[in-house]
Image 1 (cartoon, helix red, strand yellow):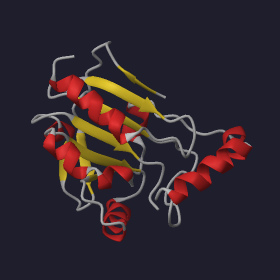
Image 2 (cartoon, one colour):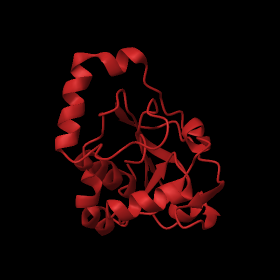
Image 3 (cartoon, rainbow over the protein chains, first blue to last red):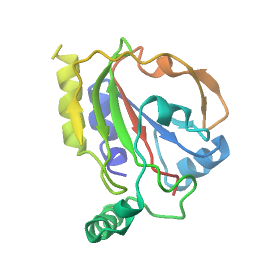
Image 4 (tube, helix red, strand yellow):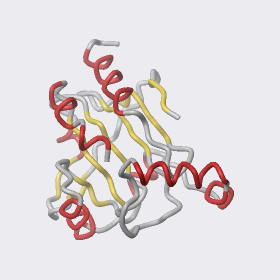
Length: 133
Length: 44
């Protein structure tokens, strides 16, 4: 998980990273422990937050495309997607930056299973939020 | 695909359950500074 490696950078900006997962609290605890995740994890087995934030779901076409196979292998090599999945495998990820007033200032809705934002982009967006931009 | 948002969408605060079974409010995580909320595909 790239964000884990950049934890210090997010902390230096005063930003809090929180994960949301599809499983139960027990699933989240096991995941946190197994991969040594330093961030809090919200358990959302009913996908309430996923629906509120309009996260997308993959289609069969998304999964079966050659480009997606390449991205999947690449993501695995970068540390994503290791282990057996728990939850809806059609669910696509996303990232939101929310300011201290609870306002969404940045959103990244993945178009595919291996689609993730660059942590450097997130850090830039946080700086923009802090700078009043 | 990511983009800065300028439509001032405010998140409605709600209760959430954490990995340790703690029940808290989502606002707890943004009230002291920017929150990066990362939605996972699945655990594993």
